[in-house]
Length: 122
Ligand code: 5GP
Ligand code: ZN
Image (cartoon, rainbow, N blue to C red; front, side):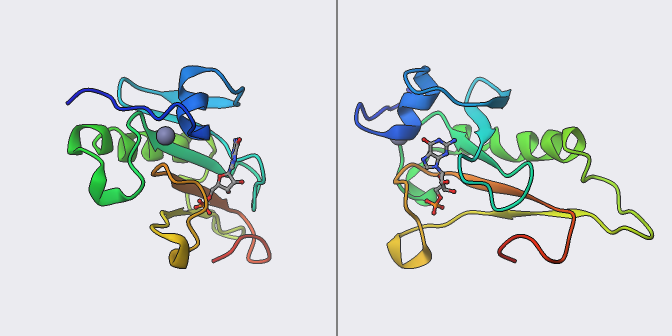
């Protein structure tokens, strides 16, 4: 499946480098970068390099690159180990549709490090 981009989409512009982003991990079919309004330190977005508004509109080959990036982020952001006295973890969250709090109409997964019970949505 050929990559599809939307010239007006902010995340397509980020993939193409037309808008700057703080890139973390990039693969052939997906791209990850820091969220501009983080809800926790290290809050990262993982996006397929395909302009689809909702999860079900993105071809599997693009989605297949997303979870491996999430695994690498868990290691890179050091939330892959459960601390004994100081618990750590992460949430992976993906919103579809305005009613589900989706704002940017290009599928994205929020990778949200969870190092404190006091920060983050969840
Ligand atoms: P949504 O509510 O659609 O699931 O989340 C969209 C996310 O994209 C928000 O967390 C918002 O901070 C982030 N975002 C929106 N525009 C930009 C941008 O230009 N650059 C970056 N890095 N993040 C953005
Ligand atoms: Zn797009």
